[in-house]
Image 1 (cartoon, helix red, strand yellow):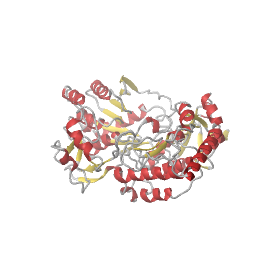
Image 2 (cartoon, helix red, strand yellow; image 1 turned 180 degrees about the horizontal axis):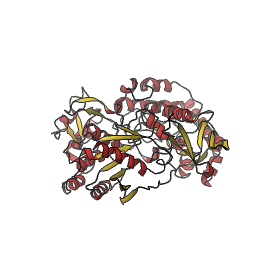
Image 3 (cartoon, rainbow, N blue to C red; image 1 turned 90 degrees about the horizontal axis):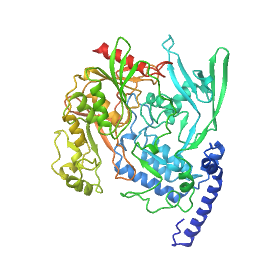
Image 4 (cartoon, rainbow, N blue to C red; image 1 turned 90 degrees about the vertical axis):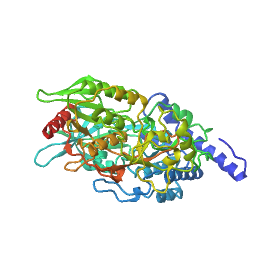
Length: 585
């Protein structure tokens, strides 16, 4: 612990702080032993440990000031977040400045309580790009070894069931869950999705993310959490048959992501003055800082919710052609299916090879990916010329202007840099910027000044050396569970809005329209680089700017629901999508 010898009272305060942290180390001794022996941690033991880290008012104030400065100067949606949600979205407006200032004046019982209050404030944005994470607290994994999925039958009353898949007791598989924690099961899931899930402005998408059907690490959030649960267990009323109805009480299985090293060697290290002690380097200034409590505009894996425990689903009606590309054939319909779910370094060649294998066939897409995917795929599939993105805008500060000027002439053209004007085109002309000043502009108005132009030379080479595919936008249909985020959202929205590709949303709430994408604003970032948030704007066929995409409700053209069969075999959903595609053709 660093002792700053300025005033004797400060010295006394810091010495007392060391003593309190030592007490936290003692309170966490059982947790450390469990983690070191690779054993789960008991709920009350974990609670005692987490609540024992001392609240440090000075550190808390500096943290809030830093977050407030960061969001006030870079978060493009700061003012818009205060408005009521557009029709179709469901979330509460939030005045971040007011709430953060109020947070700064509040005294908390522990550092954990403060961290969660700050985290929950930003969660109100329902913006998957923007959150605050403490690695010492959010690396714990709380698992019930129980997966729920939603089944909607097509009987006369449109019955809704919550059905469980129990990895501890398989005899409970496919039992109907009638109540959770004393509430009707559906209401319990909807309430959780409404209050606790922060990664979409659409409640239907959040509902899907609470369950076990999202094929990514954001799924199953009701039963697989990264934040400390409010209760030590959850009770489920199960109805398995006429003769088997009972109450299941399931405790949390608590482990720690990536082993015990970080927690034992860093979080409990009393000589560490980064996370707990007042640190003058973690200030409200425009410079790179290091802290385990970081404001994020990223999809970095270490900040995501725990990975889903779902097993790979069986595909009865789809034949693998090449990785992530399938040929769907039920004897009546032959359709190509591309499942693009994650960013890969070799993504471009995989996409090219996969679509070449599916040449001369229709397609059904379930899409997600890297920043360049919207540009590359639009050019690849529809032979479109750039610009292949929505008009975009960023906030330019005095701090970033020298970086922009430097990047204009010195940046490697093959290395993407968020403040390099060469990676943007001017809106609406679609031409390259002639100099840094033209890119910076007057700064009096932030409205759709840019097109993203992030294709690399390798991507350009691939596009120049491949023959055009035979299909048009009428031959493509997009199917997602609504969690098609960030660059995936930009891609599907661009396909839908500009190229009129039809879309299907799966799951969600019965007879309620649902988005096919989520949080198109922002950008994938790491906390050790200059910060950037961007906002993209909807445009019509004439290129006229409409509203910000992040706050524009875009429901899918068609809806499909999960049942007991397609929840386990997505190829059945692809068959339904193929029928819709062929019918509209």
